[in-house]
Amino acid sequence: MFDVFNGDADGICALLQLRHHTPCPEAKCITGVKRDITLLDRLTDVTDSTITVLDISLDRNRESLETLLRQNNRIFYADHHFAGVVPRADHFEPHIDPDPLTCTSLIINELLPAPASPWAIVGAFGDNLDKPASRLAHELGYADKKTAQLKQLGVLLNYNGYGTRVEDLFFPPDELYQRIYPYKDPLDFSANSPSLATLLAGYHQDMHMAQTCKPMHEDNSCRMFIFPESSWARRVIGVYANTLVREEPALAHALATPNNDGSLRISIRAPLENRTGADTVCRQFPGGGGRAAAAGINALPAEQLETFISVLSRQFST
Image (tube, rainbow, N blue to C red; front, side, top):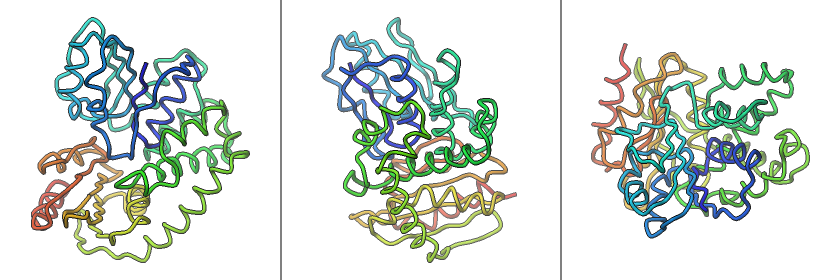
C-alpha cells in the first residue's frame, strides 16, 4: 500500500483525515517538496497494490497513472488542480474538483462520515482558503481564538512545504506527517509539539527577510517580485505570496527565485477578488501548472521574464 501526497498543508491534512478514519500503518509514504508533483513516476513498477493519491495534479501524472491502472493497481485519487480528461477504470476512484474555493482537505472532509475533522480546517487555511476554513470552524463551534490557532498551523505547515529540495525545509514532509499523526486534534499538536516552535521561529525570520524586498514590476493588475537565491527565499515564497494577495486583493502577484541554471521558479496568486486565471498563465510556459487561484512555473527561462510579465498583466487586466 502507498500513500502519495503533496508535501504542503493540504496534502498532509488530507492524508491525516483519511488515516485517522482508516489507519493503515503499513502504507509507504511517497511525497516531497510542494512543487514535486510528478510523484507517481516513482511507482511505475508497482503492480497489484492499493495506492492513495492526494493533492497532486492528475494531468501532470497522467502517463504514470495510466501505467499503474494497466498494472492492476487500485487507485483512490482526490485533488483540486486542473485534471484534463479523467481516465475511467473499474479499479480507479477519482474525486476531482477544480473549484477555486475548495482544496483536497475539504474534498476528503466531504467524503468521510461526520463529524468533520478539524484537520480539514487547517488544510484549507494552509491553502489560503480563509472563508471556507472559517465557515467550517464556525460550524464545528470553534471560537475566534482557536480558529486563529488553526489558521496559524495551516500557514506554518504550508510554509514548510516550499523549497527547491527537501534540504531547504525544516522537516521533510513525510517526517512532519509522522510527527503530526498521533494528534487527532490539531490544537493538541500546537500546544504540545516542539516542531511547531521550530516552524514558527523560522517563519517569522523568513517573513522579515521577505518584507525587505520591493516589487520589480507593478501596474494596475499585478505585482512581480524577484527574491535572491537562498533557502529562506525558497521557503517563504508561497506563504508570502498569500500575504501579499491579502494586502492587495484586487491584484495578481508573482514571486520568483533563481534556479541554479539561471531559470526562475515562479509562484502566482490570482486576485482574491477573482480567484481564477493563475493556471491559465502558467500553462503557457514549459513546466507550468497548478490551479485557478494559485499556480507556478518550475523553470522559466530568464529571457522569457518580460514575456511572462506581459502575459500576467494581460490576464488580470481590468
